[in-house]
Image 1: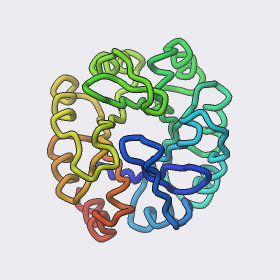
Image 2 (image 1 turned 45 degrees about the vertical axis):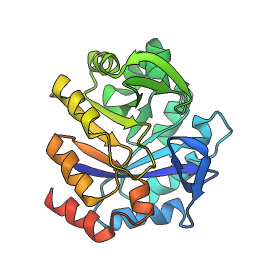
Image 3 (image 1 turned 90 degrees about the vertical axis):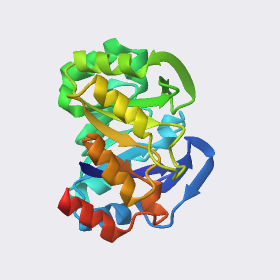
Length: 241
């Protein structure tokens, strides 16, 4: 199972939220580049970056951070947040992202998403199944849909994509453990899915359990920033799993 640390961006700074609530924002002192270099030094190969400003519909220049990290590290970066147009996707890929994290557009405008796949390739996209009560949430988790997570995954499979990122919104940023049962249910229904778990990771034991369930990757965010998972534990896991 691959460890994928997260950098959430607001105004060019590293932040963390609770359940996607912007009023809970906590800003961390280290620059995003410093954080990325720390991860690379531990043996991390992949980074998850989210532009929270763009996700909230605000003007954003966080793509400059993406460009800097892509240029100064060897990390493979998936980047998302508020990407709703073809030029925006092209800009992110040209800035150095290996993959684009797509959520809302997959649900709201599947014709556009199919166009992106034709233009850039299915391997350039990591669809995000952001879940609340088994239904998909979109637009920075602010809008509920009636689409069941299983239906979302089936549609993604039909587009030739076998890897998704799934966040249980109720768990995100709470440091109370991941949604183990949700991930078990998803993998029972879709055993060939490459599932990346996100939200709630709070300890090294959580990583081991997610690996045992069969997740192919896990996003680590607040647990790292709040030192619930140490650099030594992260390095050990990377070298032994």
